Length: 493
View 1 (cartoon, rainbow, N blue to C red):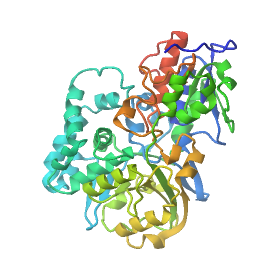
View 2: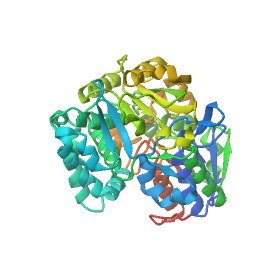
View 3: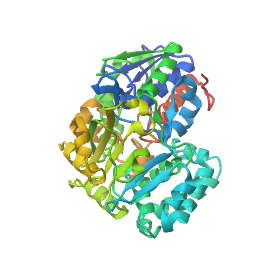
View 4: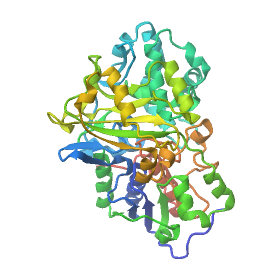
């Protein structure tokens, strides 16, 4: 498909980035360090996208509005090269990466220590070690593969040969045959449910193996003081290299920013169609319009008078908890949810930042947030459902709630138009859409409009705070437009 010409009013030394989420900021930093004059345009009154942190209920108790726990921020090639710790971002990593309580009071626990995890999984401890230890041993190569543009061959065959049989065993009906007990399968199913789609599935298995092995390597950290510290570090670097950020500016038409020469859009397909539709060839526009969106999230933020009174003695040490029951229950519920069938017992993800960052709370006031998986576009306020499900594993939880705030799928979409129908993954993670995001093109970041590129989670490698979509899109733009080939690790503090 030919690319349309750039506006005649271009200035090759300038670039514009639409959207200031982690990918938009990663793209902006990459362009600015290559010598371009970069302006970031953000529709909201503050930058950061999914990395915003605010005091919702008390002035000294900070809540993360979207992303709170960041295994990929600790592991992605972009973030590792950017070196968040050197920029003052402390990633506090709990020894208990995540936990999955069951109805009978037991819990599956994913410790940083792989041996400790295996010890708690009874008859499946050896199987868990066989599953995760080889991936942990080659973690860097595995992360590089799964957080790539998914278009180029890996450095060698070892990691694909390790990964492929594991994905097929755990992403197909064979998944039901892989463990003998109920703790290990629940532990893995809870991570697979991060894809917001029917299970078992190949994308679910891929995510489960990526996030699951990171639990035993770099961990599942929370940034000290809130996720906004990551956004601030990226923004500070952009400003230090001559860039600027304009908040409260919603771009209505692509030609508002096309004179910049290079435009990177941290936008989902619908938002890009909104601003660029009239300029796009019909075939590409149809492909963007045909993108499928997944189930939604219904989120509730809590202010608690004390830490959650979990029945299981170790759960207070976990920053992330999955409430979904057994593997069979998680698989069934996620599959029903993907078909639009509401449940009184949805899969719920709970994040407790005080488990790793005690400074996030104070005696008498602690933050907690959770979201339930709900059908796409569901109007449901899930606060009561979430409260009741936590209460099952933490009797007395309801009595600790000082305040709570709920967001429906529609409210999440108003907060960020990329979350269509509450889909915080910016596009269903089907097998096809995991690779061909957002349209079937060899380079997913290029659009048919010369100088305009997509860099959102709707492009590979997909959702998560990793910055790779922005970084890879910026590299593509620099090579295409200016003939600049930047090094693989272009950052230093």
